[in-house]
Length: 237
Image (spheres, helix red, strand yellow):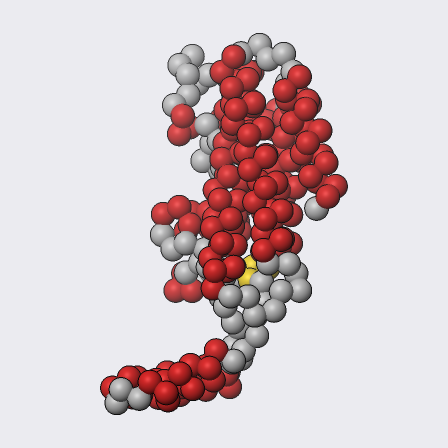
């Protein structure tokens, strides 16, 4: 992670020192992409502080704080890529085939942004093969967070036998509440909370078949992807 953080700082310095031809491109680079780099580094550092790799049984407050930093990280990864695409289009003076400017929603690095992607291929920056493999995961997680089910860090992972025990205790908890037996309810809650083990995974909707991801390693890959694309595009401008 430290290596990519240093690369991101060097990239920021290069962007801040650059003389852009287009002022709008400069705004996307300096006030968009570069600013997001700072947010992304901060989010990663706070997540590793709050929930280190060897974390065991974190409390609910820690999980909530970590989850919110994770949300900010994912959304700013997407925003940083959009900033790079806008910077590229503005600084290169790209337009539609009829000479009209692109609408904002036509500029990006996603598969639907064919004209922008073709201009990047022609500049021999990328053929998008590796990027699209990464995008298969990232776009699913980002779109779910922004529009459907937010990302979630499960407090515990349960094997099959623990799931059965969890459900048995759940029924007993309901009965204890009905009987107003709060001592029994407290005892059962301790039993239920002791089930399973914590591991640092993130997921969104299980009904959508979301694949759980180990988020510490994935964040570094996501951050590296954005820094790498920033380096490539800036070098070609």
